[in-house]
Every structure is written in C-alpha cells, then in structure tokens.
Length: 254
Image 1 (cartoon, rainbow, N blue to C red):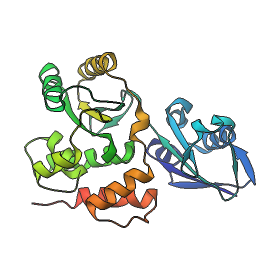
Image 2: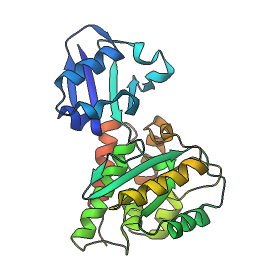
Image 3: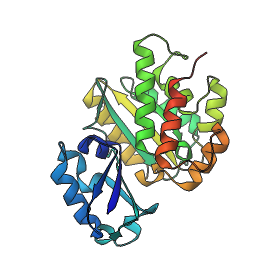
Image 4: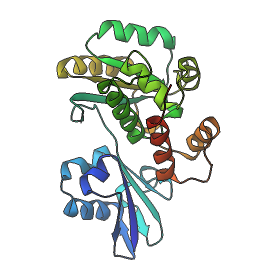
C-alpha cells in the first residue's frame, strides 16, 4: 500500500490530508491519475502546478512522472501557486512567487514596488523562512482575519503577515528574521481585490527577476533553521511543522 500525503490545493482537491493507493508500486503518473479520479476539483491537480516528493526528494530530480513509488515510500504532493491569478483568498486574488536571487537593495526594492503598484498589497521575505506555499497562504489568511476583526497587531496586513510568519509581535525582530537579503533567494507575496492591478505587478516581476517557486519548498534545512528560530523540536515531520507554524501565527497577541 502506498500512502500519499496532500498539502495545499492538492488536499483541497481530494478533501483529505492523506489517501492510500492499494498497490505494491506505481509510477508518479499513475498516482496522479488515481488522485484525479477521486478528486472533487481535478483542476487543482494540474501536473505543471504540483511538486511531488518521494522520501523528501523532488521526483523532478529522479525520473519525473516515471519515478516508481513502492509500498512504504513517503509520497508528498503539494500544489504550487503559479501566477496566483486563479487563487482567491477572502475576496483577494493572491500571487506567491519565489525569486532565485535578490541582487538589488532589499529595502529600496520593496518600497519601489509598493510605490508603483498602489492598489496591490506587497510583502517580500527571505525564501528560507517559507515552509511551502501552504505556510504563506495560512498565515495570510490569519492576518486578513485579524484585519477583519480589528485585532491586528500592526497597522497593515502586509506587516501583520510578516510578524505572524515569524511568530513575534516585534516588527524589528520579524524583519531581522524574515527580511529579504541581498544575494539570497526571496519570495514575493502580493494580494489585491483588483485583478488587473495584480497582473501588472506580476508582469513587472516576471520581466525583472529570475522567478522559481522551487525556493519555497519545505526542506530539512528550513526545518532546522525554523526550529532553532521558533523553538520547536527538530524531529517534527513536515505536516507537524506546518501545523506548529500556523498555530504560532494564530495565537500571537500583544
């Protein structure tokens, strides 16, 4: 039997965090075919928008969709938001995208983007503190709910996202932990109720940056770094780490 863990849109598509395939072995392609047959929203399982790991190794670095999975292997499938234009969150359209390397001054970069795109809320963080797309979506959902209930700890949803991402109500500490760093991988999080404004922002970053969502994926190195930073045990598995990070974001108070 093959157990398949599902995160992000993949979990939403199937309606549960894990499913079993009663076979001794199967290819990644066959697993995706199986998931499509049991999915209520197969559009969320478009193959180009999925990261599939086998025993914590990206199947793209193995044999891709021809990779053979055997009973007892650990398979994880997560949806990556490419372009964000089909992703809605509490009335906002959302764009999450990774950047391989930030080469300009990080502070000036974010200020310039915000000045140019006044109808888009923009935050940018070091990709090393992003434990997958579902981490960011979950924390942003918490930040937007805090804004709705008028219980924000900061004066903007962008900054609320940052401090809750890092589990601290100290803005300077959150910036120190999660701020963009020159010559390191980064991540843009942008959201707006105006689709065209978000498309214009997307068009600009596509033309000016080397975008690659692989820098957002969970990894052992990120888990160790976040454990040291936020004080949780190193031995937590991927789903437990995500649960801890979201709980930390949700319970943050002044």
